[in-house]
Length: 592
Image (cartoon, rainbow, N blue to C red):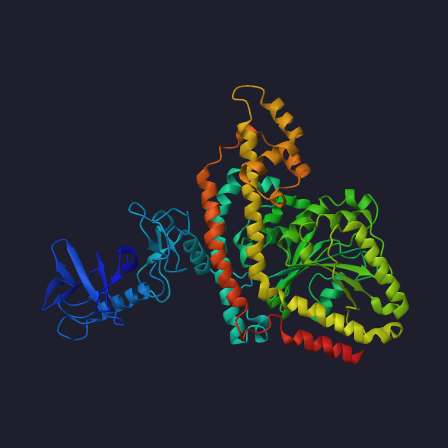
């Protein structure tokens, strides 16, 4: 199956010597074995740069032994072997990239011809025909096998239907195309780490029923997501229209509470609105795990597709306006805070919008801001419609806003607040004196959004590391509590007793395994989720599972993170969001 899989090595002449990899050729009408050697062991020599297969007896690779060119079919075989040998020789790969098993006498090393990583035979038992590797199927890992199959069936891993649409601006730059390809490759590698080394722990100990739902391919390959939150009529939908510089399917704008549903605005070939139930069953999208919120929510969720340069770089998510009172909380039919928490976990930026004339924080907005705890680094505040007040009033409104947020957001850091009027209308004469301030704030906000795609890979790696650390703590907690359960009877009473003293049990696990307190989950939420399960039903924690996960965290992810950082800092990369958006926004200022 290739030199690298059977111990290829360089000899003193600069060529490559390998075993068990030889071909047959016709010489004078007689079938002969190519290569060197005798007996059961066949040894061949590949001259550097000329291929490795199809060497004639006593000749160099690519010839028939007398110096003449080898037959065409043997040259193609030689070319395939050269491709196999390109890149790393695998000497630095000590563990399987799939199951983390150590390579040795009983576990051979095999190279995936698609991603280039090294796997054991069990994790790379499939074969597929790949471009650049001839017409014969070559070995690929399990993840690449299914990914290549999805592409052959017409699925686009980026989730944009393969449309060119806004590519005239965003994808026209060659550096941007290369960066997008590197980003997809990095996310596919991250997906392999998750499926092989983190997901088994999550599945064994029901991680998704305690915390976040299981990750799918669309969660890794989706574009950076920007979540907009705010009370009704603060300008969330107008803000999206302002960025897109056009109307979009499904928009509802008015002074009354018009947006009554979650609306994800994404890149698409044609303008259309995809209902939530249809979008949730599409694994190529990042919304497949929304099915856990039920039909009541999916009926209030839509995906708006259109062609726009900015949507080539980011996805915008509009949310229902938050109202005051108990009625709207009870009659939604779904848990609004839980849905916001789901989007917040997967978002790269969270914009909380306020109206300069409505600074009160209702009960539901307070609960919504509280579920953003743990995502403070993503949150930015936008004080919209600031042109409707003069400079003195704006100063007082800004102070009142910071005072209100300080009572809700428990963070020692000061939240970044952007001031301005984010819609397609000229500035009000009352706020014209602050035009220079508003323009500077707008440029800062656009610069922040422009930087999201460049750092998206780093953020996804960071989120997966946080998730893996939580999954490890969760497994250790469940295993600790399970070991305290009786063997025969009294399980219910014992579990109730353990649930009542979780603080003590958390401290024991932390001390026993030297864990950081910040890696532990919220005790109240853990207790509530634990009530739906029986500790006796969980399996005993295998040290192998933890070792595999630790191997991914200590070997695979740091290596991937270094690669991602090098790509993010490479020179010549174009700005992710098209310059047309900035130019148009400046034109709007000029008109004002």
